[in-house]
Image (cartoon, rainbow, N blue to C red; front, side, top):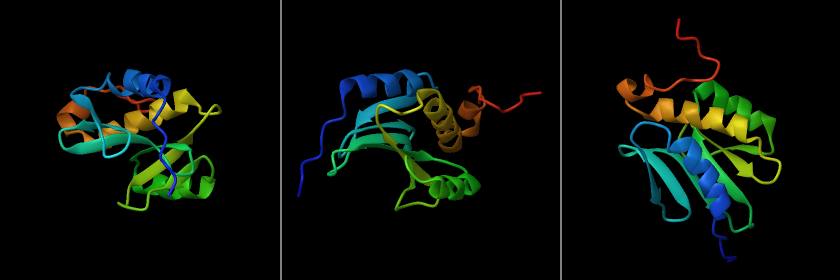
Length: 126
């Protein structure tokens, strides 16, 4: 079995900048890679695969999961949980889009009182 590569620090730093801005969203080492959680709920998990590719998994609304699955590369549906999707991270990653997806993931996983503190792109507050 091939070794899993360590997630590059520059990649973790970019994710830390996005996820660290959310209330009570804490970074921790995972069984492989790094994850961010709010309470006991995982918001995002980044890791290197045995194929040497880097992936991030996060949560999405159920109807969006189907859309991501059909979009194909760089997106994929997680093999566990009904609302888990992921994305391959590489030089072509759209970090603005990923930031929006991670914002949605946080708001899905966080208690309502914390999610209400986050401005969600494309969601009207009026």
